[in-house]
Length: 209
Image (cartoon, rainbow, N blue to C red; front, side):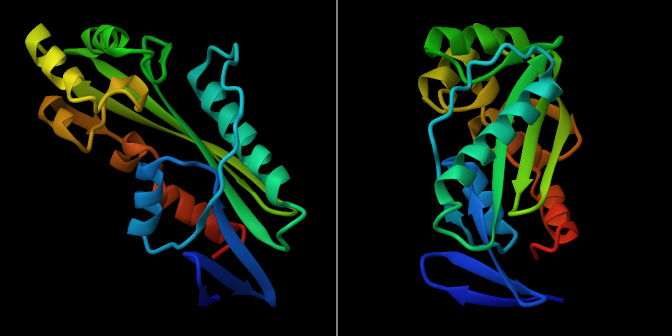
């Protein structure tokens, strides 16, 4: 097993065969940060601006590409400052009938999205890319989410809370929207924004833990 040395600034350094590796989360998402903290990992958050306006229409390819794009953008920012590291890039979208749904543009758009999802089963895809000095791993997790029927009044009331605006598919499963979740098949945390159990297992495979 590796020896874990805790350092300041919420950064964990993992020693494996004499190598010190720093974990970098390439995302400003508070939900991804909470999920990594939940499984006991400390890390540094480094974000970068990337153009997410891509023409990819397949949900799996879409999230895989953007997770890789985000990880590479952060890797370029830190590669001259860090010795050994693993960058975690991630992207989450909702898909209904192969129609990719990202974050809503405004409240009216959020209502349109939720009307489309109401009473139906949709998919949540999260792509994750792990990048080290000499290793790259990209994987995609899918979770099916079934919703109860929602009235226009219920949709409007939820949208007015503002909870929908920074979330793919215009909802957060861990908040008030839980009242409308009929069931899920797959990883719950994947819907929140990061399949942390899979991330943990993949980190072990590349000797980052």
